[in-house]
Image 1 (cartoon, rainbow, N blue to C red):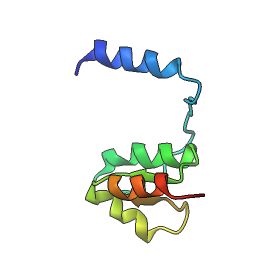
Image 2: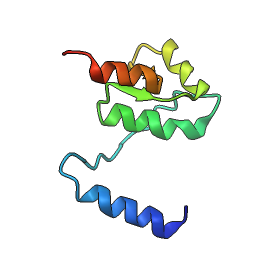
Image 3: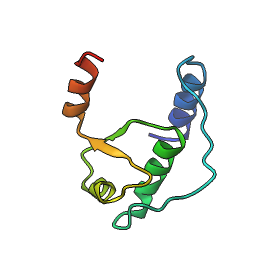
Length: 86
């Protein structure tokens, strides 16, 4: 998409009240089959995310890790979670 588009998206995100900047201070390296995916798991741990929404099969490795515990859901499963009563 290009540097200009990326800069515009970052600038837009910085203006939203429900967006927090989280700086990670560690690398868990939990996904061995696709190390590039680890940036997402590190972000999820640092941001205390409830889950990672993905179709990416590499994230299934997270199901074998008990700490830190990160669940993965498909977009369809996430939609059900969003619509379910608390």
